[in-house]
Length: 134
Image (cartoon, rainbow, N blue to C red; front, top):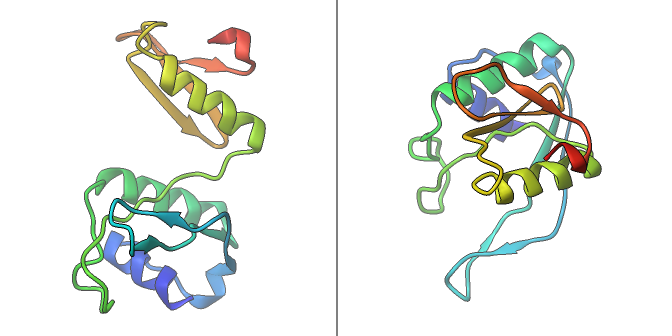
């Protein structure tokens, strides 16, 4: 809980403990380049209101290069990433679109509200729903 509130404060979003419904670590431990160092499991946070979620995502988007510096952690400075949690199906599509974006001439690929969008240039974004949309 303290970690989430610290990240929110660093992003400039005011959150209270009542705004956080649940926090849990998910997935496998991921190794870094050095053999002895492991990165912690990703955190999944459920917030009480969608407004707070949107504020956190927007603030994280504006401050993409934030790090753990000045947050009081004993480990060395690391970058913080804040992303939407997608369903397994949407996550697979998102990874495929990102991987194949150069071949498909997609210039921008992003998610919003659990949906995947892409666009080739200055035109409006196109929503990708299934693999054949790629």
